[in-house]
Amino acid sequence: MTEHPHPSPSRHHEPRVWSRYVAVGDSFTEGMSDLDPARPDSYIGWADRLAAHLAQEAGRAGVDFGYANLAVRGRLLGDIAGRQVDAALALEPDLVSIVGGGNDILRPRADIDALAARLEDAVARIRATGADVLMATPVDPRDAPLVKVTRGRAATYVAHIWSIARRHDAYVIDQWGMHALRDWRLWSSDRIHMTAEGHRRVALNAFTTLGFAHHDRDWATPLPPAPPIGRARAARENARWAREYVAPWVQRRLRGQSSGDALEAKRPTITPFDR
Image 1 (cartoon, rainbow, N blue to C red):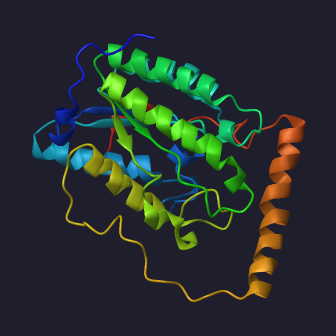
Image 2 (image 1 turned 60 degrees about the horizontal axis):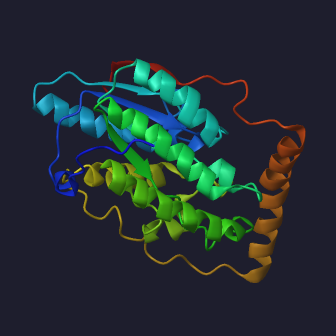
Image 3 (image 1 turned 90 degrees about the vertical axis):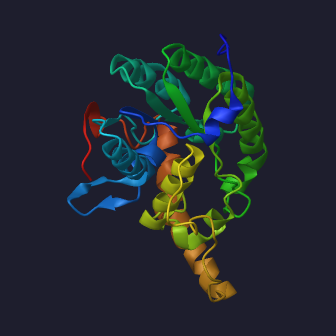
């Protein structure tokens, strides 16, 4: 794996103006479950929201800004780091966000070291073009039913991501340390995808990670405490969640299917962004 020759961590404190941003990834970067009111069959998501902030900064500098989002729900890292990165580089971006591996980590036999090596190869390819790279750690699953069994694998992947970022002078959205995301009110009913408020907060995390300041400085602040939920209600909600979301997921895995098999990228080419 080729290491970027001149890492400069201090650069991360000095924002720059990007003009061609491409996002690659899975359902998180596609934007589920941040519904787009203008297009009921589509999602917004943190990457679109970050693009809006970057477009404003470019506009202030008198620079044209374009954005593409190649992420598709259900994709494994092999597809993200392979075909999606190939398509992204063909668009000649100056900033690429690559977030993936979550769907791989859910599989009990996931080889985390091999995943990290594949991610690093993709990051090295992107950096070799001169483009900047933005990654993200997984969210800490410590409070998630069933998914919390993957915490050890996820934590190992987090350590790899920070090491990859150091070696290749990349940016990292720290979701693992974002305690506000431990509140289920920021997650949709499937407990896998964030609400609009969750995506908004992650976008601001990304924006500040890239070195910018924002007037909303409370994006990392947890919500006020929620009223306690009784055991009976919690049991009913857990049973409904298992029936409506876990069982269909298991059935798709057994059939070798993905929720995004028939889907294409929502924004496959770089176009002006005016949200």
